[in-house]
Structure formats: structure tokens, C-alpha cells
Length: 394
Ligand SMILES: Cc1cc2nc3c(=O)[nH]c(=O)nc-3n(C[C@H](O)[C@H](O)[C@H](O)COP(=O)(O)OP(=O)(O)OC[C@H]3O[C@@H](n4cnc5c(N)ncnc54)[C@H](O)[C@@H]3O)c2cc1C
Image 1 (cartoon, rainbow, N blue to C red):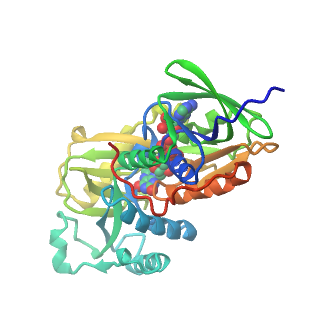
Image 2: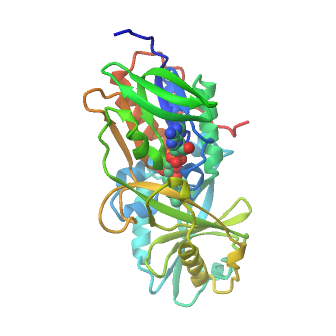
Image 3: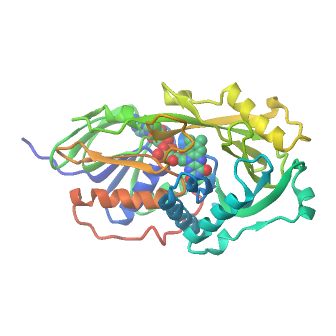
């Protein structure tokens, strides 16, 4: 068979935060990288998140300790590396007589949070005095037992992803956009991929192909021959409302109907309210906030802030799709760790990366790179993502 030269060490499909992170880590490690995006940077899940760079306090309830430790570590790092894009904000947790989580449970959770962060200053927490309650946007105070204040970080998810892509391209990664992946064939030593760029079909030979296509990852996988085996996943929609700025402070609320966490967060001059968990089937492009989701979210807001009058018609909305491992039962307690699979069995030339958190994109990308290294040629690293600063993209 005729041998062609390798065009790139690594080709990555999808410029959401996962693909951006892998492109940056791979370029920093000295590899020749191609990043393909069919629409625009962060056009899907990575612009539809709750915009939190967070440890994930609630994941302590499902014993996801390593995820929380890693997230807190990455949060501390991003606060240092991307100060224009990631900023701390105080969150308030009101606890009522009928709340599912008692003050003792929350104290235990916040203390464990502190411990897992290595007692980082950003994880200090306190309880508000009763005299401070009236400052809280008219929050309901009947049967209110206490209000905790602790810190999380907020970002603009789309801007953060664009900054990571910018960092990757500054390190030499090539961005092809709009470029649509069409198919690939793997062989023991390489992978041949086909994509459409500016309406024309292109081909490239690469050492590794990385599938970071988010909710499209399973569809994209079927275009690879032989087809890698992937775990069964489900798409779980999370909707948010963007409301007029009716709250001054940030809140972590417990939905009175089902105990789920709902965030009410001032963000870019609006109030961001979310999120929901609604199974999604069919085309990922059709994700949108359903009327029952808007109703659910507005009910949580009304429950805690009965004086607020928010017209449903004043709400903008958006929805994103979580890629979660298939399982029975509700999605709330399911693992939020990223899913990483190397395949197909005989070649190991394709790495699929799905789900995970915006917060942990850097650590996940480094882990993905370590998984791929045995298949990659030796290269001289040119930077370390632990020290690369991120600035808003031009
Ligand atoms: C409702 C919700 C709230 C969340 N909130 C938070 C939060 O507050 N904090 C946090 O840390 N995490 C949060 N997450 C998780 C986080 O947002 C996701 O893990 C992350 O955005 C996933 O990014 P991704 O790059 O894997 O996928 P995506 O961002 O969906 O990117 C996939 C990309 O692949 C491209 N693509 C698909 N097919 C092709 C093709 N054939 N050719 C070329 N390109 C293709 C798409 O256009 C898209 O740009 C949330 C997730 C959801 C759903």
C-alpha cells in the first residue's frame, strides 16, 4: 500500500471547551494539531452552561469526591490564569425548616469542600446574622433557619472557550472553521479523516483523532471505520432563563417540588436562573427551553422571592445537553465525570471525550493527552497549561 506522510499528530473534532482544551494541551506539548469546528467556537453546550467555575458542592452528596477536589483545584488555577474571565462571587444558601438539607448537613458539606480545596482562602464560608437577612432581595423569612454564604466563580463560558482556542492557536494549533467532519478510517499506525471545508472535501492523515463533538459524539462515532465501541449515553437537557436583573445577590436554592439545586445568579446585567433535567432524544440542534421548564424555574424563584413580579414574557432562554452515562433513575445524582474512551480495539487511534465539566477542561485535556501519548511521536513540549495565562480573544 502507498504510504502518505502524516499531516498532523492530532486532529480534534469540535471547538467546544473539551476540544479547545485538548487543542491547547496538545499544542503546548509540542504536537502538530488540527481543530475542526463545523459552526462556531462554543456554539453548543459550551455556551449553554450555568457559567460557574465551581467545585460542585452538590456532588459531595453523590460522593464524587475526586471530581470536587479536582474542580476546586482547577477553579483556583483559573482564578489565577484567567482573572479577566473567571471571577469569584458570593453565593447564598437559605435553609428553612422544611429544607431537605439541614444547617448541619450544609456545614458538613462546606467544611468538606474546604478540606478538599486544601483550605484555600476562597472556600471560607460564614452564616449571615439575622440582621443581614433584609439585605437579601426580599427573600422569604418565615421558617427561615439560617443563610450560608460561600464563594464560587462565574465566567462567560463562550468567552472562556474562545480564550482557550486563542491560546491553542498561539501555540501553533490550526483551526479549520466552518469545517465538518465527514468520516475516518483507522489503521494500526494512523487515521485518515475526511472533512468539508468551505464546501470542499479535504483529507488528512493523523496519528490520533479526538472526538469532542459533545451531544453529537455518538453520531460522529458511527462515521468512523472500524467503529469504536462507546458506552451508552443519554442526552439530558438543562434549560436556563435570562431575566431582567431582579436580584442583587447570588443564590443556591433548593427546588421546593423535588429538592434539586437551582441557581439564581446575577450575570452580565441579567438574572440567570437554572437549571432543569429533561431527557432529550433526536437532533441536538433542537434543544430549547420547554414551557414546563420555564414554569418550574419561575416557580422556584417565586417560592423564595414572593414579592418579585417577573413576567414570563420578559424571559429569554437557552438550553444545553449534558452527555451522561445511561442509567435508570433520575439524572440529578448521576456521575458528572467526563467519559473518555480509546478505540477502536485493534488500533487505538480514536479518543472520544464526552460530558464532564467546563471547570475541569484543562485537567481533563491533560489526562486525554496522557492516554494518547503511547500512539504519538515524541515531541518537545513548548509550554505548560498550568502556567499559561488566558486573555479574552481578540
Ligand atoms: C445545562 C448545563 C449546565 C452546565 N453548567 C455547568 C457549569 O456551570 N459549570 C461547569 O463547569 N460545567 C457545566 N456544564 C458542563 C459543561 O457545559 C459541558 O461539560 C461542556 O460545555 C461540554 O463541552 P464539549 O466541548 O464537550 O461539547 P460542546 O460545547 O457541545 O462542543 C461540541 C462541538 O462539536 C462540534 N461538532 C459536532 N459535530 C461536528 C462535526 N461533524 N464536525 C465538526 N464539528 C462538530 C459542535 O458544533 C460543537 O461546537 C453544564 C452543562 C449543561 C448542559
